[in-house]
Image 1 (cartoon, rainbow, N blue to C red):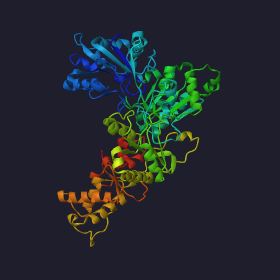
Image 2 (cartoon, one colour):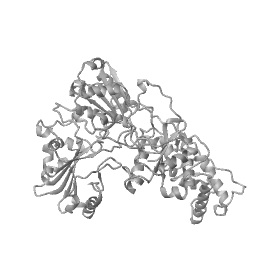
Image 3 (spheres, rainbow, N blue to C red):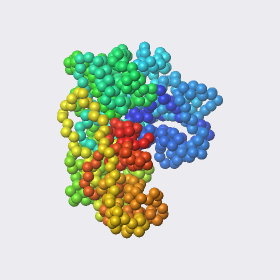
Image 4 (spheres, rainbow, N blue to C red):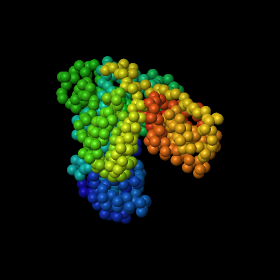
Length: 626
């Protein structure tokens, strides 16, 4: 197989399903040295895909730079085609490189036009995906596949059988908790799926095994309940046999009322979020927030188990019948049986044994925090990628307030300035972490100030941390999904009375001490408050419509002096009070349009809203404008 290379996607993130199979082609005429060593080791970006900057694979050294430069000089050299368009490639057209995404769901026959047109081909896919099986009709009227072995076997499977060289893409940012893929990671992917941990060490409760009398009816009822209570979460159902898929689909439709919101949930047209009932081979890469699995041990092959145990992003429920559960011990040893045993034993939590690289700052930081009576842990790695030091919530030992990032190590996603300043912080913030950066030069130049900033920031995070939730070992079945109905309070604005006082003067004539007092009043009252809103409050107090250079200079100096005197604290664009204050998400529906902007909502306030809410639902709940 000369000219072939394969990239294993252990994170199962790059593929977009068979409805969006894609091919990238580099035309002849680009610098031949820019791709002579493909495939090189690659890794995922923050979005979990191996392509970035015009679709060129990220590699290292001069090879990477030449690839980027070749495309930047001649953007037309890169061609992005859907699979169907490759059948129209002219015989006279040729390319240097072909990158075939979703190669595990592209058949040999479908890949032939691309392979013949390219001098070198790179296949991207997951070798553990099951091959397509002959089905009379897939759920929801998908087009039937041609009944031919050439169309049935994927090009990735055929190429791997010939021994082509491979590279591995192992990073994932897809799952809400690493426990969702803990079984697949240990039994199928050889601990190849790794991701950053979430800021909690509590046992994960988003996985449930249900032993029921009638699997079809139980799954249909669970799907209807989900559509009623949590329509913001996507849903998928997997059954191992086509007839079971049809039975579940018919059971759901028989209970729907036309024109209701529940019925609309099951008929969404967008293929990326629509509800589905499918067999494992047809559900490849159809990730959903919640996945319901109808267990059928007789036909559950290893590759099908790989699909069932990796598609759920937030919650997974597996249904088996009482008969299957009773005869489980008598059945032969299979991967499906191991999976069921794993679920029965509630062995959901991922390993937390990986340690961080040695940092010369970490020991000093831990000692400084201990001297301030702040509990911290050197590292936390549930998910396979360690972070730390992490700050432990004083009121909840299973929750972490924040983590401290330094620039002293060169671990994964710390190799470059881009990794340390952009990719790594972005992923951590998406997972709910409060990231505090600590730079080595600043630590030695102004260690006292650096420690003071850490202590003050941790104190703020502790003041707004939610109380520990009281939960029982076994929750009521009707409350499997957390209640997503948000509770907000009206945004209140209070102005001080300055008429007839020393503060009742034009802003430019006020001393800095008076301005600091006014700024502190609004920070204490509305923290966390955005800098633009804080300045607006001062202008409103003095009945000023707009700010000129003189006023801007006076307010800037007052803010800087207030920060130096520690009258209040600033993190990013937001100001925080030093007074303990219980924080609740605030509804801004009654505020002027200028203030009803998502950018003016602090991360701590957003974190109090349900994680399942998308941006549209978040804006609606907080009275923000689209």
